[in-house]
Every structure is written in structure tokens, then in C-alpha cells.
Image 1: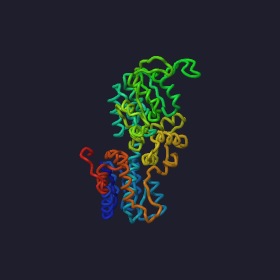
Image 2: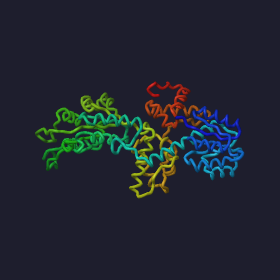
Image 3: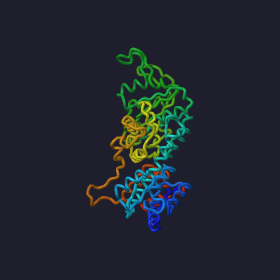
Image 4: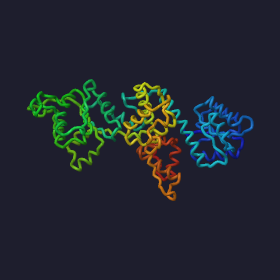
Length: 457
């Protein structure tokens, strides 16, 4: 749905000017010639922003603002005034206004202000929803309602009931182990153990012993036989995390285990049967590693039966807020602090940041924010400096003022960048950008991007 703005002004020419300016950027606009008419429209309909003139016959703009704040506190009010004085600003703030603007209007900054106000309302509503409604998740411990995560949930549900080997790929910190646990929990072996080993965290000899176990006397200090993780995971699931870092000699032995479903401990003289599911995870490009001779091709095809690619956090849109709210509640309980929610401004920063460290970085940022918080609501000041300053956006501008891009060019770059991050998903891109889809399509057409296919509509 298009975002709706109510414009209140006793001057018909000003109403028409604002109407045209806001419709140009995708708003649906309603007009009122008096404060009384405006309050009747607000009572009967839903508006994302109200713009009201300050000086009007009868009920003035401050009175309109105060009444709207009373009956619809979630709707931001922007006050227009010909008097850019301190008294006017203080009066607007006391009345509860979101912002105030002086005449004559500079249209582009005014359009951006109204878009920001509408975004503020959207974020406030989203934060309130997250605080009041705990949406059930299909898998315990995994948060997300974005299209990208719905695809993951569907894939996990379809593959979990089988015994096929699963390869989980994705950036560091994106939640690959949580997906592996979800596969295990939906499998017939859910009552069995879930065992994980990081193949990059130990030297070759130790990794071999950890995986395959060893017989008594197999090497110095091997005074007793010890079953490896393959045997310890029997009846359950073994996660081979960072499998792309596994040495080639260990890869060869693992390949035999996958083929024969038996394991021979280091120094042992007999094969022991295995009944387990193998799940592998990596942030590496295994196909490239195969080409470069760093990963065995035959092992690659053994583990690459079903592939689940976990999206980066920046491709998950508003999932950032759900994950942040979950982390906030967890860290607040742990710290014994009465922190319950995010401010809308903090939520906007979280949505705008890139999260190169993915969910792990988000959790770190929220833990820090909770530790530093002084109020029941996390504010922008509680967030790490790089998130506060939005350095993750990476919208580059030149240092030379003569080569600075226009606002249109900055917007074009950002829209294209979001579309690329969500792999062309128009609905998700519109949600991340804060547009309705019709507005996004108009911008895509203006920026020369291919129009959406019928499947996207």
C-alpha cells in the first residue's frame, strides 16, 4: 500500500503545491482546509504523516498537532510556519510535532523530511509489533520472517527427514550451525547426539585423532583407546564446520568413511560401523578450492548432495529488527537490566547498516548497547560508533566538491545496491528501502533498471 499523507492548510495554492510535490515521490495525499476537517479525516482514516500549517483561522496548527498526538500518537506531525523563530520551534516541540519547516518550501528537502517521517512511523510500528507479538518460528532458535529465510525453512523441512548429506554454505557469522541443528532436530536421529567440530581450529594430527579416535598405544601418551567424534555422533548428527580448511590427507580418510559407513581408529586393526548423518559447513568457495587442488573433487561430490545457502544478514531485510529484539531480551535478562525495546531511530540505524559480520556482529552490537543503556529503550547513542555513523552503507562520494554526486545519483546507487543485496527480490527490496512496491517500480524505471517480471508483482 502507498503511504498516506494528510495536508492541512487554509491556502488552496499551498495545498496543491504540497500535493503535487508529495505525489511525485509516491505518496497518496489527502487535503483539508481547516483543523476541524483534518481531525475528522484522521478519526476516519489511517495516515502515515500529517502536514499542517501553523497559522490558520479557527483551530491553528499547534492545536491540530496536540489533538492528533492525543488520539493517534503513532502518527508524526510536521508543522509548516512562515516564522522560523525559536518560539515557533519550541511551540512545535511542546505540541509533540515530529519536525517543523519554514516557508518558502525547498521541495526536495521537504520531500525527504516527509519520507523520513513516514519511515519513522513504520519503524515505530514495527518495533511495537516485535515487542508485543512473539511470532512463532518454524525452528527453535532461528529468527526470521523474510522471504530469504522462508526459503531456508522450506529447504530444511524438505531435507531433514532424509539421511542425505547436507552442505551448508554462507558467510562467517550468518548462522550455519543453527541451520545444521535445525536439520538434526527434524531428523529421525533427533534424540541422538549433535556433535560439532571446527576443522580449522586444530592441527592435522589432532584433527585426525579427534575425528577417527585412536587405539591404545597408537602414539606416545595414547595409554587408553579413545573413540573419535564420528563414533561419538553415532545415532545422531556430526557437523563438520569449516570443512574447506580440512587437510587433504584427512579428506581422503573422511571420503572412505562416507563411502563405507565405517571408521578405523588411528592405530586400530578393524573397521567399526557407523550410523550417523553428516552435515558440512563452510564459508569458502569449495568449487574454486577443487579447481586449485586444495579440496578433493570426489569428497566435494560426496558432501554436496543437498546444498543450503544461508543468506547474509544484509539480504534479510527487517529480520535485523527481529534478531535485535530477541538479542535485546536475552542480554537484558542476563545483565539484570530493564531494557525492553529499541527506539525507532536506533531501529533505523540497524536497518541501514551492512552487518559485514552478520548475526554475530549484530549480537555483539546489541550486547554492548544493553550494557551501556541507561533507559528502558535502546537509543542510537548506545550503539557502536560504526553503526551510529552508518559507515556500512558504503555509498561513495568524492572528496572533491566538484565531483560530488547529486542526491538523485546517491539514491540510484543505493536502490541498485539494495536490489543486488536481496538478489532482485522486489518485495524485500521495497521493505528494506521503506517504499511501497509501486514507488520502487517507478524508481527502477527512472534509473533504467529492468522492469519487474510478472512473478514479482
